[in-house]
Amino acid sequence: MAPPEPRTLRFGVVPGAMPGKWVERWRERMPHVTLEMIEIPVADQRRALADEQVDVALVREPFDRTDMHAVALYEEQAVVVMSVDSDLTVAETLDADDLAGEVLVIPGDDVLGDPRVPGTLEPAFPRIPDTEATIATVATGVGITIVPMSLARLHHRKDVTFRPLTGGPVSPVLLAWLQRKDSEDIQAFVGITRGRTARSSR
Image 1 (tube, rainbow, N blue to C red):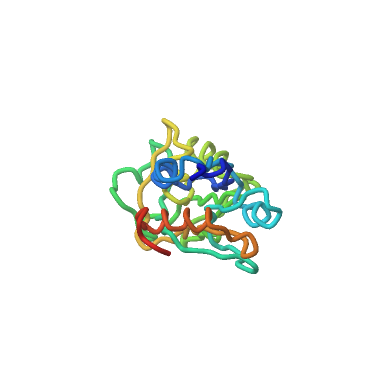
Image 2 (image 1 turned 90 degrees about the vertical axis):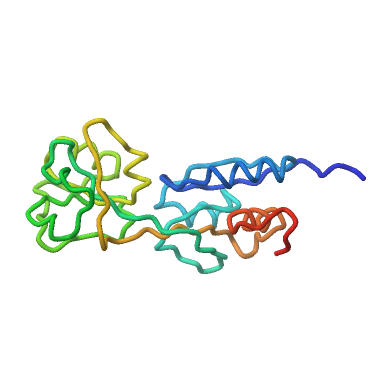
């Protein structure tokens, strides 16, 4: 019996998503299919799939599922990112009341649906384009920001820290692909993300 033909599956990943365990299982189970990982901005996640720049992708809600298959995988908890000198660091977790009077800086590439908190203050400066620059600004002590925990870790700096926000918004992460591009390789990847073993059926 001839060995399987080598091929590639292009796997899009939005910033902060953590596919490591699935990538490792794929390489063990599907060594003849190269998994090419491609980082895609959240703003371009649907277009990357629709234009077939990637075959399958980890994306964040909100996500337009028209002509798409999508499988919910997990939800990321929101955290409050602050300067290490902030008084908020004395708490292990925070709730909305703890943030009263704080300047809340919402990044231009926010993925939590504009997480405004009653009692917080608007910044006196224009909106900052992205999360990385927003966290750099928060590091100076001018305010706080609220992002998924994975993005806080991705953009970690020595001069900032974060605390979980009790009752805060969540960021659902999905696995998505074009309906017309469904394939055995994609279904194999779906199976890995859903915890199916190599011997289990779809």
